[in-house]
Amino acid sequence: MYYMRFQSKITSKGTITIAAPLRKALGLKAGQIVNLELDKKNNRVWMDTGVTIEQLEKIRDEILSKYPKRKPLTGRALKEAAAKAWVEGYFNK
Image (cartoon, rainbow, N blue to C red; front, side, top):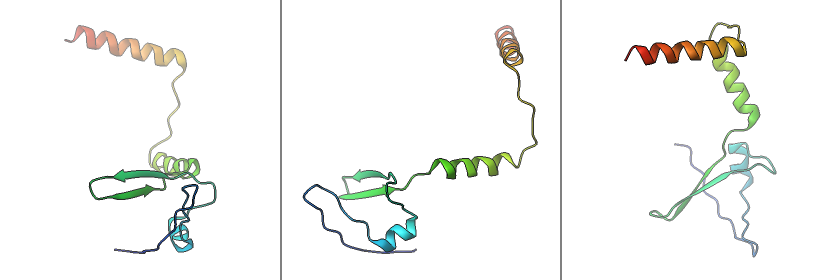
Protein backbone atom coordinates (compact mmCIF):
# COMPACT_ATOMS: atom_id res chain seq x y z
CA MET A 1 0.00 0.00 0.00
CA TYR A 2 1.28 3.44 -0.96
CA TYR A 3 1.18 5.68 2.09
CA MET A 4 1.94 9.37 2.70
CA ARG A 5 1.31 11.40 5.82
CA PHE A 6 1.52 15.18 6.17
CA GLN A 7 0.19 17.76 8.62
CA SER A 8 -1.67 20.94 7.71
CA LYS A 9 -2.82 23.86 9.82
CA ILE A 10 -6.41 25.09 9.53
CA THR A 11 -6.58 28.82 8.77
CA SER A 12 -8.97 31.25 10.45
CA LYS A 13 -11.17 30.92 7.34
CA GLY A 14 -11.30 27.13 7.71
CA THR A 15 -9.08 26.27 4.76
CA ILE A 16 -6.20 23.82 4.72
CA THR A 17 -3.30 23.33 2.35
CA ILE A 18 -2.78 19.92 0.77
CA ALA A 19 0.95 19.19 0.68
CA ALA A 20 2.53 19.34 -2.79
CA PRO A 21 3.56 15.66 -2.85
CA LEU A 22 -0.05 14.66 -2.16
CA ARG A 23 -1.40 17.05 -4.81
CA LYS A 24 1.06 15.66 -7.32
CA ALA A 25 0.30 12.02 -6.44
CA LEU A 26 -3.45 12.66 -6.81
CA GLY A 27 -3.12 14.85 -9.90
CA LEU A 28 -4.90 17.75 -8.20
CA LYS A 29 -4.94 21.12 -9.95
CA ALA A 30 -5.75 24.61 -8.67
CA GLY A 31 -9.49 25.24 -8.74
CA GLN A 32 -10.36 21.54 -8.94
CA ILE A 33 -13.37 20.46 -6.90
CA VAL A 34 -12.93 17.54 -4.51
CA ASN A 35 -15.57 15.66 -2.53
CA LEU A 36 -15.17 15.36 1.23
CA GLU A 37 -16.96 12.76 3.32
CA LEU A 38 -17.09 12.51 7.11
CA ASP A 39 -16.61 9.11 8.74
CA LYS A 40 -17.89 10.18 12.15
CA LYS A 41 -17.42 6.72 13.68
CA ASN A 42 -13.64 6.83 13.07
CA ASN A 43 -13.29 10.63 13.21
CA ARG A 44 -11.84 10.80 9.67
CA VAL A 45 -12.50 12.84 6.56
CA TRP A 46 -12.20 11.05 3.23
CA MET A 47 -11.40 12.92 0.05
CA ASP A 48 -12.48 11.80 -3.41
CA THR A 49 -10.92 13.60 -6.37
CA GLY A 50 -13.79 12.61 -8.65
CA VAL A 51 -13.55 12.42 -12.41
CA THR A 52 -13.21 15.36 -14.79
CA ILE A 53 -15.37 15.64 -17.90
CA GLU A 54 -12.28 14.97 -20.01
CA GLN A 55 -11.51 11.79 -18.05
CA LEU A 56 -15.14 10.67 -18.32
CA GLU A 57 -15.15 11.24 -22.09
CA LYS A 58 -11.90 9.28 -22.45
CA ILE A 59 -13.32 6.36 -20.43
CA ARG A 60 -16.55 6.47 -22.47
CA ASP A 61 -14.62 6.46 -25.75
CA GLU A 62 -12.48 3.52 -24.60
CA ILE A 63 -15.58 1.52 -23.69
CA LEU A 64 -17.45 2.39 -26.89
CA SER A 65 -14.44 1.55 -29.08
CA LYS A 66 -14.85 -2.12 -28.07
CA TYR A 67 -18.32 -2.31 -29.63
CA PRO A 68 -19.25 -2.19 -33.30
CA LYS A 69 -20.53 1.13 -34.56
CA ARG A 70 -24.30 1.28 -34.92
CA LYS A 71 -26.47 3.69 -36.80
CA PRO A 72 -28.55 5.60 -34.23
CA LEU A 73 -32.32 5.29 -34.38
CA THR A 74 -34.30 8.23 -35.67
CA GLY A 75 -36.92 9.74 -33.38
CA ARG A 76 -39.71 8.00 -35.31
CA ALA A 77 -37.92 4.61 -35.25
CA LEU A 78 -37.29 4.95 -31.51
CA LYS A 79 -40.96 5.82 -30.89
CA GLU A 80 -42.11 2.83 -32.97
CA ALA A 81 -39.71 0.46 -31.18
CA ALA A 82 -40.95 1.66 -27.79
CA ALA A 83 -44.59 1.23 -28.85
CA LYS A 84 -43.88 -2.27 -30.19
CA ALA A 85 -42.10 -3.26 -26.96
CA TRP A 86 -45.02 -1.92 -24.88
CA VAL A 87 -47.62 -3.75 -26.98
CA GLU A 88 -45.65 -7.03 -26.89
CA GLY A 89 -45.14 -6.69 -23.14
CA TYR A 90 -48.80 -5.82 -22.54
CA PHE A 91 -50.23 -8.72 -24.54
CA ASN A 92 -47.64 -11.31 -23.45
CA LYS A 93 -48.50 -11.15 -19.77
